[in-house]
Amino acid sequence: MRLTLVVWRQQGPTAPGKFVTYPANDITPEMSFLEMLDVVNEELIAKGEMPIAFDHDCREGICGSCGVMINGVAHGPMKGTATCQLHMRSFKDGDTIQVEPWRARAFPVIKDLVVDRSAFDRIIASGGFISANTGGAQDANSTLIAKDLVDQSMDAAACIACGACVAACPNASASLFTSAKLSHLALLPQGQPERFRRTLSMVSQMEDEDFGGCTLHGECQEACPKEISIDNIVRMNRDYIRANIAKREEKALAGDA
Image 1 (spheres, one colour):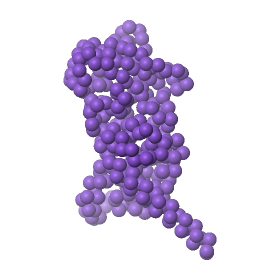
Image 2 (cartoon, rainbow, N blue to C red; image 1 turned 45 degrees about the vertical axis):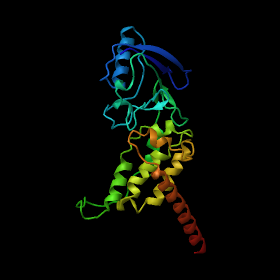
Image 3 (cartoon, one colour; image 1 turned 135 degrees about the horizontal axis):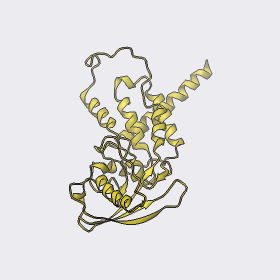
Image 4 (cartoon, rainbow, N blue to C red; image 1 turned 90 degrees about the horizontal axis):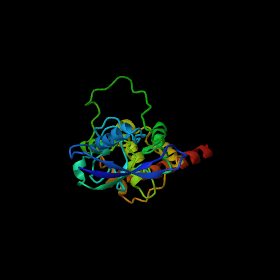
């Protein structure tokens, strides 16, 4: 296969960027998208040019670091597929492919296709955990949990924090990511003691990171490589309302005391 790549090149966060065209020759249909970029980079290095910077790690759809916009679509044309899992058989010989980084104010470009997604880390650090000291590990069957709740929790926990939901959302909202990280704990007994406090903290941090607001457009779940449902956003919003009501009632009771 012979392809034409139109790639966003930007030397640094404050440097001006532009699209640059590169030929991609001798590409096989069995290659992954990242392997195709490897081939292009090898040719650039051989010519003494700067290779295209892009994030990658596991290349197995687990780490979530490989996300880019491919022809305007987060992770490319295949549904439920991370960029590293996308194979070149999804394209035709002679195609022109445009590749650019996630576009969001909260994800500033570091270089070329690499963006700073540390905002996600700060959202998790604000409350995406269970802090109670539970002692030694209990037997797996000592706390019975309904299978439908376990399935929903596991589906939410499948989020790999790639950022496709933010890149695909017209508002650059991080609500799908945040709600997934909240739901996988909120649906289980272990997550109940801090459920509302966790929701208030993580939603507040999400807003502080300058992500846009969610309008349930739904593009996030379409772009998500793990096909996480926007039902989690509904759950997050409901818990956020309940948490604020509980907080006001606590203040009122404290005032009466």
